[in-house]
Amino acid sequence: MSGIARRLYRGEVNVDFVGRKKLWYGLSAVLLLISIAGLVINGLNLGVEFKGGSVFSFKAPAADIQQVRTTFNDAGVHQVIAQTTNNGWRVTTESLPEEEVTTVQKTVAQKFGLQQNQVNLQVIGASWGGQVADKAVVGLIVFMLAIILYLTLAFEWKMALAAVVALLHDLVITAGVYAWSGFEVTPATLLGFLTILGYSLYDAVVVFDMIKEVTAKLGTTSKMTYTQAANNALNHTLIRSLNTTLVAILPVAAILFIGTTLFGAGTLKDLSLALFVGMIVGTYSSLCVATPLLVTLKERESRYQAIARRLAAHGGAAGTAAKSTRQPVTAGAANGSVPDAEKRKKK
Image (cartoon, rainbow, N blue to C red):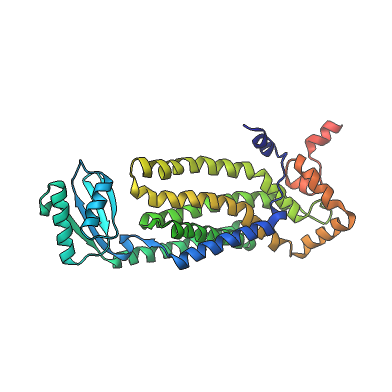
C-alpha cells in the first residue's frame, strides 16, 4: 500500500470535496454540455436491433475480418459489422432491397467458395428494437422510482434527490461518450446502462449512510458544521469507494481493451464500454456531485444554519476542520463528546 493510500485509509488525509463544490459543478456542467452536444450533433449509433437491417451468416474458417468487410463493401454495402460466432461469420448491414441482397450473396459465395444458398439471410425490422427500447425506458423509470422510495424511507427525500440527480448525470455522460465515439448501441448497451446505475447507487448509499451516522447528533453545542461533518464522512469512505471501483473496473477494462481488440469479441464491446465509463463517472458523481448537492440542500435548514453562525462567530469552524483530519469520524465525535475508552485512558 502506498503512502497516500495508507494515509487515506487511516483518515489522515482530508480532501475538501464539499468546499470545492463550485469546481465539481463546473466540471460536471462542461461534461454534460459536451455529452448533450454529441447527442444532438451525432446522435446515437443505433444497432440493427433498433433501426432494422439485414444479417448475413455463413461459414468461412479461413477468412479474416478485413476480408469479410472488404467483400461486403465491394458488393455495395456501406454499413458493415462483421463478427465471428461458433457457427461462422455474422455480418450485419443496413436494410437492403431484394436485388442488393442477391448481389451480396453471390459476391460472398464467389469470394469464399460457397454456394449462394449457404449465405443465409435474416431480416430484422425496427419494430422489435422499438419494443426493446420501450421496455428499457419502463425499466429505468421503475428503477428510479424504487430508488426514490428506498432512499426516502431509509434516509430522507433530500438524499434521494441528490442520488437521482447523480444517476441522471451518469447516464447523460455515458450516452455522450457513445455519441462521440460512434460505438453501436445494442440491447446489451441498454443492459450496461441499467447496470451502471447500480454501481453509482451503491457508492452514494455508502457515503450517505456514513453522513447520516456522523450528522445524527449535531446539535447546538456541536463543534463542526454539517458541511464539515459531511466532508469528514466522505473522506472516511473514500478509500472504500476507490477500492471497489478499481476491483470492478479491471475485468471490464480487460474485456474492453483486450477482448475486443485481440479476440474480436464485438458483442462484449457494447456492454463493456457502458460499464467502463459508467463506473468511473459513477464514482466521481457520488463523491463530487451527490454529496455536495446534499450538503447544499441540508445547509439551508435552520438548525444547521444556526450551528454555522455560532461557529463562525466564535472562529471555531476552521480549527475544527483542521482537527477532523486526525480524528476518527463518529457521531459522538461530531457532537464534541469524548469516547469512553479515551476517558478511561486519561484516568
